[in-house]
Length: 212
Image 1 (cartoon, helix red, strand yellow):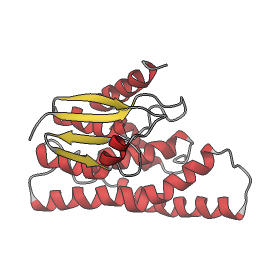
Image 2 (tube, one colour; image 1 turned 90 degrees about the vertical axis):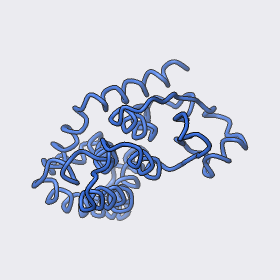
Image 3 (tube, rainbow, N blue to C red; image 1 turned 45 degrees about the horizontal axis):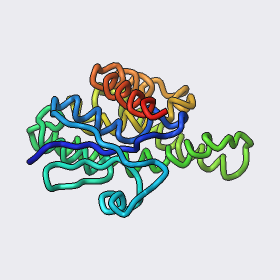
Image 4 (cartoon, one colour; image 1 turned 120 degrees about the vertical axis):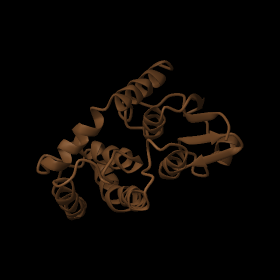
């Protein structure tokens, strides 16, 4: 293992600040107490070197020595392997953390991201398309509400799964999408009240503001 380098954009518009996915990695690194530094790539000029690390021209990616990892879920899994603060040691807890991390990406974010993009675009009319997105998200949130009503954290202790799930739900909450789901809303509040999230969030905002 080598030095940990988190790469993100040098600047993004105001609207996504605080929600760019490098915050998931910043948060995990802070929770794990791992030393890292942040490097930037231009937002307006995706170079061949950028695509070599991130085939879709997105951010973030993490460099760990001679290993370069893209996709926030894969990065969190890697950091979970490096830190007992992020992944339970027992097989049952480890399995729970992994399945809920993938659930955050494949079941919840698959519903929340299209809905969020629609809200971002300003679509408010009750069109058939909007109704389908609403129904898809509501179905996922009803299941999460039942799960979170009975537990503090998804795998018993706070893990990489909570970083990812809380961040996914946080974007829904930004548009009041959790208004009818108090357990989900309380879960997001509980996760984002952690000092490491506060630092990660402040650091991301400061990073992008520095390029204004």
